Image (cartoon, rainbow, N blue to C red; front, side, top):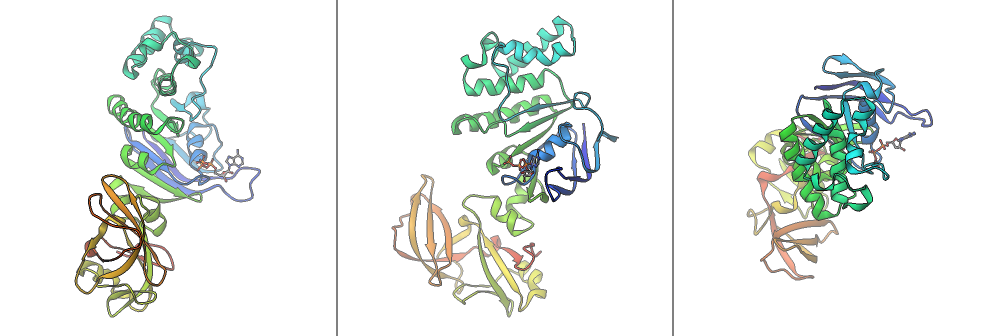
Length: 361
Ligand code: ATP
């Protein structure tokens, strides 16, 4: 099922301002769409509106082409998986999974078939007669998914479903969820504040901040072509370095002149109308070059070296006090306090209008 939001706004009665404003969005049939953003940006509010658990203050919510603003949650053909799982502790796994179908007065045989089918897919068949307290966190998470699956919904809504799991299990379940999505092909809308979940699982990411959509697109687009400084710094770890400066004679010159960069021809064309204006340049930590392009090198002091195994992160400082985070291969040798020279990979720079924060291209 396709889900469309047209100029959706949400205002809670107890709040003075709109929590969400002018949200326009299309989630395609069979798509795995991740709504990403920092705490409080309105992700859950948006998801609950799609579920029918929150009212829509303004705009149109469409399932396929039908307006569903006033349709009750139970009539929306959706299933929701919550962060807390919300399993009934006194019921067995089987009973938990069967519950919604029983309410719908489905035939016993169909209930059994569907529960077993879901349990097989989720690998919890052996646990069907255990109570939630007797199984592991990961298994509980699967039961919550199974309970949603047996309804055979047209849309899955998931609100941070992995956040109660430890790091290893979370990594495992990310892959399992993607596989499950490929098997079932159900349109899925998944809320998280974890950029790794979004980058690894999504067909489409919707990044929100402060009740507004910042960018919609494929994971690579977020990494390679962030639309503004917020997106650039939200996606990617370590956080993208942003240096402020201006364009002088076609060159980027940092605030106090230590950094000078000659952009590549493409960036030069894009920056032509920015001569004399304030511009920020973004560079990801892995795009510095030890040595670098002649003329565009800079020296810095490596303050702290963090060894992560496959890479070393150098927390460094320019002489004017600007911090830079530089990643290098793990087998390179660096010590705290050393001075080193680096250059920029000029084909990996992101230029932003400092005033608006918007990408220049
Ligand atoms: P988190 O990741 O922390 O869950 P979120 O991005 O999901 O955050 P929401 O839970 O949608 O954000 O909250 C967005 C804003 O709406 C917050 O400022 C919150 O205080 C407000 N809000 C959420 N639910 C209600 C409510 N029931 N009544 C009033 N205000 C609410």
